[in-house]
Length: 405
Image (cartoon, rainbow, N blue to C red):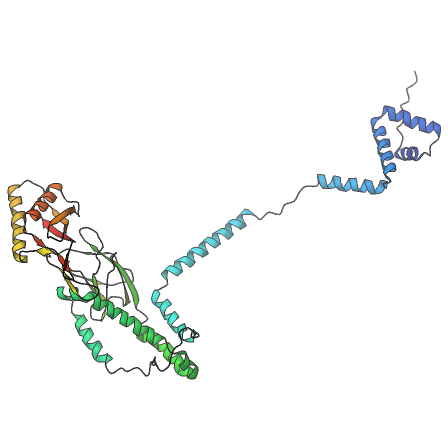
């Protein structure tokens, strides 16, 4: 039996000739017959016919198909920064920023102040505030005949620790001394710009020596806070003085203070009206909170107001000794009557109104309720108080009394 002969599919060249109409009728019949039996041949003929109708170049179309195919199957490449490079950069930036912040916080204020003062004379003088060479004398022309004598007297007075009278009269004076010293330092550092232009060599020497004469290099600004040792409340108007030198200041309403020109190992005397003064040796520019103990017999107090006039705080009509004896005897009687009762310290704060009456009692240190009630009873049964007088008129004011049971 003879083997069946399988038909040979037409070549691409024959298909192109078929589309171009160059084949014989027999060959055309063979191609059409193969196209009916082979789907690939039929698709090829359809594509060649479409390209002929569109007038497209076969080679150009083939190149375009190949290019798009290569773009679709080609692997995509992305340029990525390795994660360890990015991590190292982030760490370096964080460490650098932290070091800069630490250096900025640790920079001494005196160094920044000295640098600012040295640069100040070379800056141009603003037109809105011209400096007059006649009205503002230079460093060499300032009279210095009265300064040594005045400084000697001030240093002798400041060498002794402040007493109760000094604490009462010192707030305004210490603030004034601090302001005068600051103004002197600013005047020494601020040399007139006109003289700098006229005498450059002399101005440079003055600018270099003036800051050192006003504030030595080893000085700094001391910061701290004064608190009541019993109630931990801020003490406004406390006196902070450098022993042996004419430098001092007073605490603000929140108990904080700032004192310029302090040197390491300086001895400070800190006190307040109605509290026991303390002495502290300075080590650095930041002082730990200072706790002052209240005096037991501080009943009548005199304060210095901002305008320098004295005002009398509320006090008992009895004299101080008699009222102290009354309080001591009352406390002793309570202890003898209650031998097994509670013991402790009671800080009572109350209001003395315009009529001298006591009200609004407050337990400031959170003492035992029985002791607090006994302290209030003692105050109420005592003599009537005289109110505070300001400008000849009675005023209500808060007062504090300490009991030791």
